Amino acid sequence: MFFGKCILAVGLLAIVSVASARVVRPTVLVPERSADDSLTARTEARNQRLYDSIQSKTSRRTVPRLLYGMLFRHPNRDTTASGRVTDENRLFEPYAGKIIDDIDIQRQQIFDPGGSWLQRAATKTHALTRERVIRRDLLFRPGEPLDPELIVRTKQLLRERKYLSDVEIDIIPDSIDTTRVSLRIRTRDSWTITVDGGLHSEGRTMIGLYDANILGTGNTLKVETNFSRKDFSYGGNMVEYEIPNVLGTFYTAELAAGRDFYNSTFDAKLRKEFLRPTDYEVGITYNDLKFKQYMIEQDTSMLVKVRNFNVWGGYSHLVPSLASSIYVTSHFNHRRYSRRPDDVTARHHPALHDDDMLLFGAGFYREKFLTANMIYGFGRNEYLATGYKAEIVGGYSWGEFNDNFYLGANYRIGRFTRIGYIMGGAALGSYIDRTGKNWNRSAVDLDLRWFSHLFMWRRSRIRQFLMLNYTQGWGRGTGNNESIRFTRSDGLQALKEYVIGTNRLVINTESVLFTPWQPLGFRIALFGFADCGLIGYSPDIFRNDFFASLGVGVRMKNERLIFSTIQIRLGVAFGKDGVVGSEYFRLSNYTRLTQYRYRPTRPEPIEFQ
Image (cartoon, rainbow, N blue to C red; front, side, top):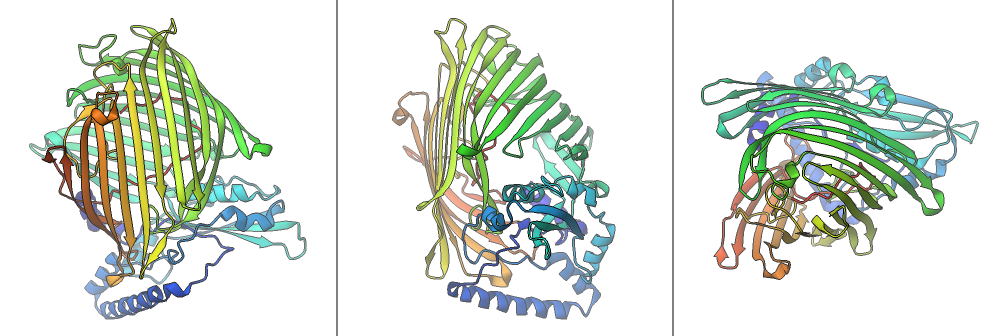
């Protein structure tokens, strides 16, 4: 899949150097370059002279000039020099409470005028995002007092839009009235037309066309066609359409329909999420799906057909004395299977039972975004969520074979400390029969993640990561989703051995060294990892099967090239008796480092997988 997308991207001249990195730069703070970065400055200057020479030599002939336009683009300003964490709320605090007089929106095309022939052609064929599309995403209006938190949340919201690659918000004080300010919002579009493809098992092949900004409206359309690469038989089409902000209401509408060989989909959604500290959420979905469901205990897939109807809602209110919001939520789910394995019983495949469930949730939360770099990528103004969420969940399930109460709780927290960034979470839940005596299908999940501050080693910067996950289930049934295995996010990187259980402990460590080397403008990061894990059915985690994996790798990225980060990884896995099934080599653009979010969502039973 990774190689297919790269080939398709190169084949489409539309993708060429068009999708610039998502960068949201604070306009009221300009970091100064420290003495430690003099080498980086000299390296960048040397690379710049090299690129200028290449551009000068290739501009003399048509074909070399076209190749230069395909492969190179002007990078955004590098912000990785300092590695500092910035609280953008504080940057705007001097203007807090001042009345917003006017909001000016300045939209920019993908490329500046005067670029290569391909860049000019891309600009001419691209529909610039309409002003009303950007304006409808603003969380503030003229005449309202300026709230720094809403400014930052607006930047985060705009930054998540696929059709925008760059956003800047300038605050301009009124020269006459010191109680008023004007805002200037500058956006730059990104190229949103993409071709996708996939080679799947059983000869199934998919080719798709994707546009995330139809006629500048911000709406997304994706069309896929499927065929067999064995005999080129037709496998069906899939169509998806999304409106990210319906009429400025912050409701997202989605519709997907079609079939892919034996899979079929009809999925309709309308939802609104929490965006402000005092806000509401609401959603309704209906889907009719047929697909192959992976049965973990049998290590096989079976065809399943199911209809789901979901409706949920919630309300949050800011409590200033706590600097947090209190919230309540509710969720109703109606699920019916028309096709499933024939051996479904009260204790076998309980996840495939017909049921109706009503859940309620209540809790506190606070979410704030900080700007940092060299964490999950090479450091182009990454937004890191901090805050916490504490929630209790309860409800009732009317099942096909029996009725049960449900009770659960979860807690998440993330913050910067003197030793680095720590984020952790704990969740537990259980079904309880009507007598209150039997607790079944219970699960607990503990998660802890930490990474250090950046520190120097000679001319390089180093960051250390540590991840721990513990999951245990008890009173489980058998069949689908009643056992767990090592997963991509909670597992061992180089392990290919198939092993399952109801008790799992995983510890992952990774050291990343951001080197000063930039050959031909490629930024290079070296990393090494060591993972260990225990999994099995014994309640005593240390009596279960033990596995470990070790390896090294390299990540490379050049902001002038159209390709994303390239990761090359070497590794080997071990068990108690020596080397086991290992994924010795992997080339991809996937990294397992992810971050938490702290805003509430609809209440759900704890997942066990």
